[in-house]
Amino acid sequence: MNKLFIIGNLTRDPETRTTTSGVSVCSFSVAVSRRYSSSSGERQTDFFRVSAWRQLGETCQKYLAKGRKVAVVGELQPRLYEASDGTTRLSLEVNADEVEFLTPKGQQDDAPVYTAGGGSPKAAYEEFGFENVNDELPF
Image (cartoon, rainbow, N blue to C red):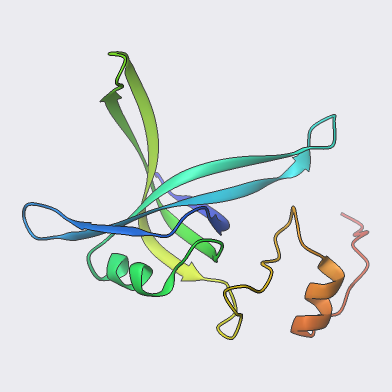
């Protein structure tokens, strides 16, 4: 089974194109922060290229923008290509089956986006009405 689940923020606005057979595809990149930090205290981030086809792609183009938080479920698909220097390279792309928009509907474009690696958790709790709980779990 090839199934990938990622949650992160768009690194750029989505781009839509149409194939020669008339099928629309929307492409965007998602930055996903890892749960741990390096020994220097720096958080690691992975970047995923995502393709959403047909109606899903059209919906992504309509509602997504740079900085918005999304959850993507899909298949990881390897692609070989020849770089400009003549070398063969491998690129991993997520072929989206589902995309869930996680940025709150009323959030302004210029409002901060709260992520695991940035933003103020206390401000996020207050703004969205969440209560901070003790994260020292017995398991």
